[in-house]
Length: 206
Image 1 (spheres, helix red, strand yellow):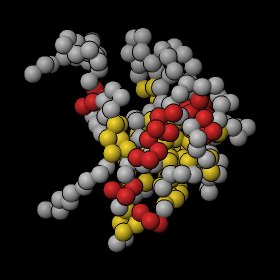
Image 2 (spheres, one colour):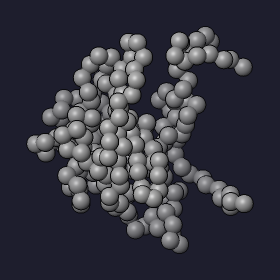
Image 3 (tube, helix red, strand yellow):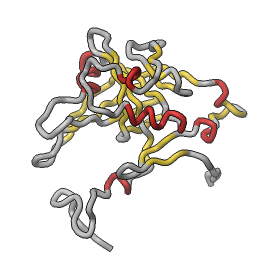
Image 4 (cartoon, one colour):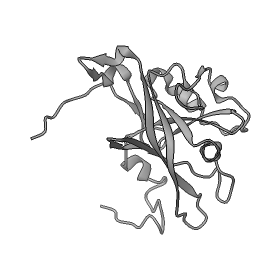
């Protein structure tokens, strides 16, 4: 066993990469749609994303700086200006297009067009979502919480959002439940590794 303090060294020998991302995994991907005050749309994936409450439904994601001491990512700037966002669920067929939207491009670049996707208008919010996605969450921002940064590290924030609308492909509903295999969610592992839901098992609670 290896024990170390990640605040001192995030990857001591024999590690060559930070293992934290690979240990807390798989993580669902929040494919976050936002817009600025002028209505310019933005789409970007965040693997630091998850649900933290079911009733009421609450989700969080954590955008960081583009570089230490650099500018905020467009997503964070947008939710400050327009406190709403969409979450398009990433199915296997959309994995490569999701990755394409992670490119660092200028704020006026349309990531939907860049990745060959269709931006669909929100039903209850201003930000668009991925029309090709089979499930979408529409959210209102509850709070933006700054997180502490390490020396020389990138600043990060937690965006907390209340889910105010859910858009579902009816073909995903089997016997009143969402068929996770049919949805085929893509999740993030460590490094450049991803996984896909292809098999599930049930464990009844005691």
